[in-house]
Image 1 (tube, rainbow, N blue to C red):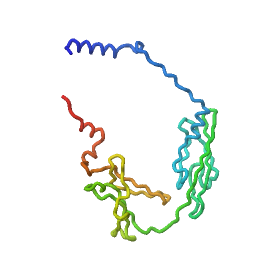
Image 2: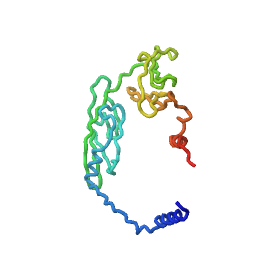
Image 3: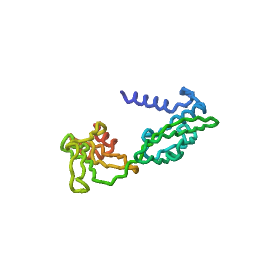
Image 4: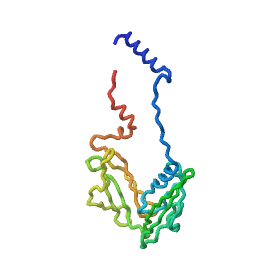
Amino acid sequence: MSRQSGVALCAALTLAILAPAAAVAMPIVATAVTAPADVAASDASGVNIPNLDDVRGDITLPANGSGGSSLAWISSDPAVISADGLVERPPHGSDPATVTLRVTATFGDSTATHDYVATVTPAPVDEPLAAYFFPHFVGESTPDGEEIYFAASEGNDPEEWMSLNDGESVLASTLGEQGLRDPFLIRSPEGDRFFLLATDLKIYGGGDFGTAQRPAAARSWCGSPTTS
């Protein structure tokens, strides 16, 4: 392209950018208006309450729906689940308790109701602690080293340990970096649920800590070829 052609092209692009907005045809998109009754019905039936079939602790009963409705709750058994979501589990050895939570959604002059059925699991037996539990990984020198292994103390002695699962890994990852390191175990306040967190990182096979600690955007930029 000659210099004169380049100047002409830049001038044409500049005129196009600076052209009045009225000269550009803009499509008009009609926005659908949802009826208040439909908003209320959607908000009433659209509440997400995790683990409703196995309730073991307090639950969140929201005061507002995603569409803007106000939500009011009524419990069929407030002694087990209150209208505020506070949970009192049945004693150990008894049957699970079934509680119906009815929500009324109000949007404008429209209202709608929906029932959510919750199953509350009995409380666990209160037993004395007997040993320590140790989730861990074994290193990055083997393909399965960055997986989760389990061990337990021999009695209440934190200096004597035995491997579980015949020394084989128990948990492996197929997501992200496909490695699991630095596990951290959390016990729920209720005492009968445990949550295991781990770092998504795998060094074996060519990884390195410098790359792992760099933000994704920086890794992408540093790995891109340069042009002159």
